[in-house]
Image (cartoon, rainbow, N blue to C red; front, side):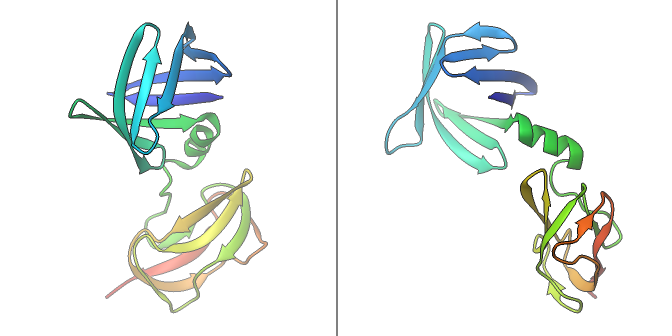
Length: 168
């Protein structure tokens, strides 16, 4: 499995294949073990050893606490990284009230109807693409002016699925 790790403005490619670990193409001896019942992890990297707390922040983001110092990092597997390259960072909504399909796919669910008031971040449509379900959310609060998506409908990238009007 290949992971892309970003920490401190630097990116690393980490390939894990059973016991074998490659960091940017260089083989290293590395293992990480959870301390049961705690957020602590113990890392052995070549001849060095470190313990730190790991706090999941969501969307592949993590905070590591090492001796009172917080370090933020992002870990993405190859598939997630590829999807983000296709659709951006995830909140892919067009301006002007049109919520568009970020990639070709199939509409799984439509969660709103015309006239409904929605809050920013509320789910509008679930789109299946590349065998993953992606929930498209309202970019801002508003009223659903129109719904062009129907469950089971195949859509193209950029196709308008829901139109919102801003709240007065």
